[in-house]
Image (tube, rainbow, N blue to C red; front, side):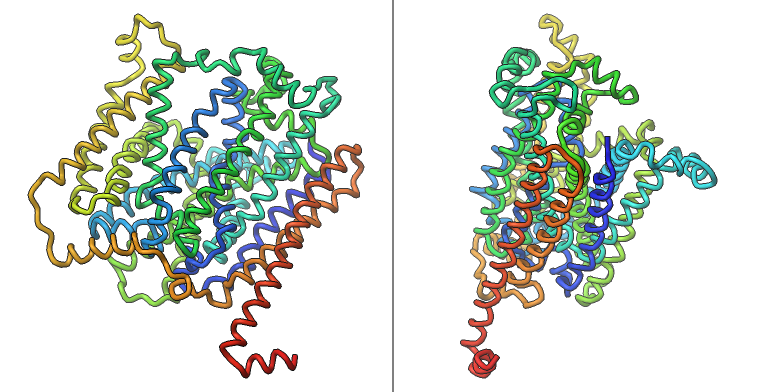
Length: 638
């Protein structure tokens, strides 16, 4: 149950996010600044953003439901992501940054030519709009559950009639409009700086409140007055161990299914995470290839312990509350186990921190939406408008149009969110999801292998996509659950085993077909034009040549390291103080200690960032003074 302090925390958070746009507006003075932070972003800011992209509202709802039901089996996905990240750190992260591009599609153009650039730019657009709208709808639905009574006044009158005509109630429509406005204003004004640098503050919120939730759940003697308790970490381990369903993976898939499932899942995550289009777009923000490797390694090393932190509340809920109990508590939810994280957190957290948890969950989704909005606008300007409409557009023109298209895309997100309740029941919705799935690996395979094989022709990219897409469509219908049940009838497979087997077979065949076709294109006799030879040679030269930060990343004063430390430090300080202000509300000693710990950590980090920013500024001025004796004299006089 939310209290006044929780509402104040949520309102403050929304206003704080809205203010990030104006705060970071002056950091962007050209297209490179707006779409990729000028390639001059401090590594620790980019690492926080990459860390945040691994979480969303689904982590605390859908994933929590999976953990409640399957326990440690949930770890299969983090394990696959970890292996993909290891490959990125050692083989591709530095190459992505050294491609010296602003968008991922530019890297595709430099390697495979303009035709493939257009294919890779246009193909994801409908999916980006769909998934952006779904994310907006999901977070609005989550917020409507947080404010069930407060939004009732919107479910009447003309506004509600208009919302009903769109298939929504007044409260849901209001939330979609408000959240869209916050996301658009923040991203439109601040660009990649607001979307990426703002993630650092959101990461602090998510981490501190998640840790507070875990500690309060584990060591509470009476969880929320229910008379139930876990008995500490070892108590949780003993209780979970006593439930084979939560620890024995064979409860869900036999080993002859599980091993191929894990192998193909690792291959899938590695391929999708290392293609030219997605990989280059993730690492364009930092200064050097070394920084790119660093942010990938640090973000995933940080994600591993946080994954276990996120798993503890649903596991505790599985131990303390049966599914019938959750069904009685959340009768309107189709899958009440998805409330497992929120339920135990609401019992454990003191006044104010529950609101902060809501903000953290919102932040997890907001991160991917802001980044997606900025990246999609960047692709439209850099890869459609520039080459097809106005190749000579000035930096100011690109910056202006980037903000215009950010607003347009935000409105389209809102429209998709509004109509999602209707669209999800149409065959068109299922067709779009199938198409997105079928184009993922076929698109990624040539864009990964093309980084390592100079001989591959330009047509290898679009032809592999076409062949792989055709094969994947055939597999969707051939490997139906009905067919698998017939083919493996002797084994009496469960529904979960059928899903895992279908995924393993589909992924394995699709990767094999795409890889075989790609290498087959190199066996065809071919001759590049002189222009193509120069383009491909330059691509590989750039990709393998380290960046010289002194000449290629000379940071302007308006987005220098010192200013980044100052700005982020000040934002952290303000937010930390707002958390400490919750101490004025009446809470139990454990609750006050949790608030003090959360707020104190954020304030302390903000203070250190300010101090270090001052140190960096001093060094910066000293370096300038050495190059300019007049400036040094004025500095001494001052």
